[in-house]
Amino acid sequence: MIAQVNKSLVFSPVDIEISYKKENPFLSSLKVQCLCSSRSSQNAKVSHSGSVQSPVTLHSTRVSRVARTDAQRVLFDYLHCTRNFDFNDAEHISKNSPHFIENLLTKIDNDKDVVRLLNKFLRYNPINEFEPFFESLGLRPSEVPSVLPPHLMYLGDNDMLLENFHVLCNYGIPRSKIGRMYKEAREIFGYNYGVLKLKLLAYENLGLSKTTVVKLVSCCPSLLIGGVDREFVNVLGRLNRAGLKNDLIGGYLSAKESYDWKRLIDTIYFLDKVGYSEEQFRDLLKTNPVLVFEGSGKKVYLLFGRLLKLGLKVNAIYSLFTQYPQILSAKRAKNLLRGIHILLGIGMGVEDIANIISTQMELLCSAALKGPVTLRRQFKDKKDSLCQILMENPLELFHLDSKSEVESSKMLSSRGPTNKLEKTAFLLRLGYVENSDEMARALKMFRGRGDQLQERFDCLVQAGLDYNVVSSFIKQAPMVLNQSKDVIEKKIDCLTNLGCSVNSLVAFPSYLCYDMERINLRFRMYTWLKEKGAAKPKLSLSTILACSDARFIKYFVDVHPEGPAMWESLRNTSASS
Image 1 (cartoon, rainbow, N blue to C red):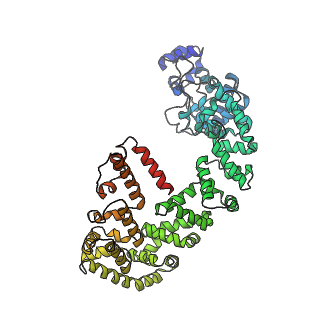
Image 2 (image 1 turned 45 degrees about the horizontal axis):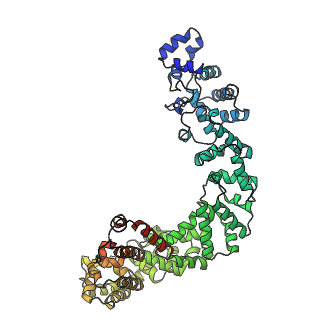
Image 3 (image 1 turned 180 degrees about the vertical axis):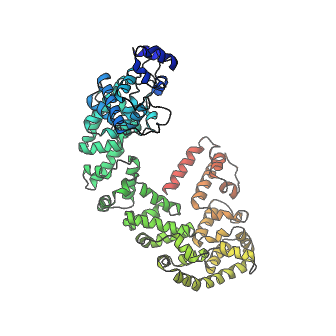
């Protein structure tokens, strides 16, 4: 009968109205638009284009509470009595799909008899049952179209979906959480009879209570795909070794989060590696579980990554975490990251910041500083002088941050002139003209006291470069002298170890401005290519270092079949060293 009705509906709305109006005057009150809206084809199994959802925005008039309640009752009767849905399923769907209900009401004149009109509409217009079903499971209306199965409109045609849905409901998982589970792990709704139940029991067999399993799979439905998740078992085992009960993990989980168990166990192993004792690890989870579990250890990785970007080596970071295990408390981690943000905000170089962190970690973690804007406002356009003060004595950061603008200005004025005179004397020796625009620019570009700049300059001369040559290329690349003497020496040693002459710096002094990781990584790749006969034996420093990452990969990695694998190996080795 439905197929016959649908077949008749392909005619124009006028024909429909004429042919049926005599037989049933009721149709005169039914909106023409509801009969000519998009609907199923002659085959009962169709795509969701036959949906009751209208492509037009909901009518502007508000749906009354009475109309909405009547529509819910009609939908319940349709699902339970006409479509033979279980009572609980029909009731939940009809009461928890408000968007679908409002769309349904747009198909009739809801100022009149809603119950009678909707019953008549549903008699001739079977709905796509997946729409209210998925909405009632907690999915937003905008998410529903993406999960609708193609070529199906009746829930009964997907018996495995309903079977596994009922398994989850009977286990105790709230229906409002199941929509997210379907969206994130659709595979579990295709399991054969009894499979899903066994997977849930497998997690109980790990020593977890049913309540914990419910919360666990609601947050992480992917745990039900395949066998018991090995990484999750590792996390559970690590908690056990710390003397924490299995079910405590339920208290660490949030329904709003998704968890990457591999990254989480990596975070825990990182804490083990840096020397956290069982007691420290247990205390961390009891007082700040968010640091480990929120974002699957994202806060730990954020802090670790920030320190790496500042140039600290992995072993040095491990040492800092071992020396200051309290760094991972929420407050101290926040203070440290803010301190780094402040130093970057006032224009301090990353190497200088790394040095301050290495020597003043405890203070940076313990002090809640105001921010870079406050300091910049106090010192106005004298940012270089502020950086200089802090490099000479990092403790001043904590004094300056709490001092008034007047006190800070006095401190700056008392220190500034001497430093400026020393730096000016150094620049005059390099050949800059006093009181010239070039000298003014140089004073801003060169960072450090005059004696520090001289020490770095002498380091280059002692390496075998001519005094006048160094003076010349320092003018080309002044940032070279913004590095410490130790860093400059290390880069020169690296250059000679690569078989290059110190004089090659004359043509490319910017070599000294690149970080050691980039230098080592690129030259090791270049050396490997030379051994394979895939690169010219003598390329300039600029050719290897100055090109972008994409260009380097194109001309120094992809040129050999084994290049990408070798490049990845070198990167992994560099990251772990």
